[in-house]
Image 1 (spheres, rainbow, N blue to C red):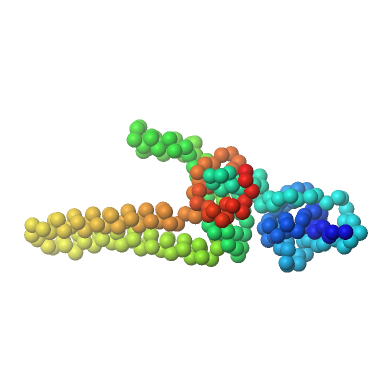
Image 2 (image 1 turned 180 degrees about the horizontal axis):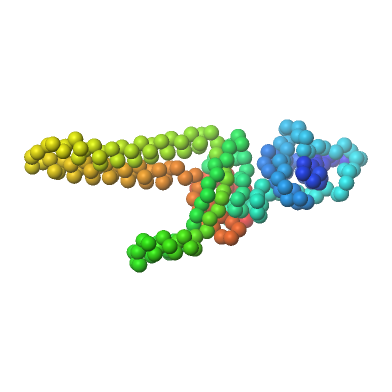
Length: 249
């Protein structure tokens, strides 16, 4: 008789029947207990776990018949869903993603990047042109949708993100410094070219500042919202290896 791995919920004690393939695919991730809705860690197939055991031949589990789990449902405060819709990563709001890097699918070693995201339809940006920025800001605040997401990052991508943030800060501060320092240093300089040098210094500072802001906007975010509705957030920026490991939604 083939042994059937059993995962027990450490909150309500419910038994959940899984397969070896299931453990190999989802071991180490979190799922939601179908009985009580609490988070349960799926034991890794090669690491013994106090939360799961293998029944010996001929021994039936105590209590109710085990619930068969066919897929992992990561821990969520709302609807437990994480998947790939062919265009973007789909996560339930307030979801804690799996312990894998959202960029390369390498182990995240327990690290999660927590971000609160907001989104509104792109057509609202036309309000900046007419009737103006103030009206756009008011309408955007009224119709925007927000979501809290938590995604895993491996040490390599964590380091790359920190480096990008540091470069963005350096360039931004350098630009501000040029805008202030050049006119101050040339304040006592007289001559036909003095004004031109001051203008060039200020414009150069503005350019460096803008480069820093653009670099930070591009390099610091890990994922960005493509769309947010009442239940789910659709994210850009996830790596292909991570997306291909997820079920299709």
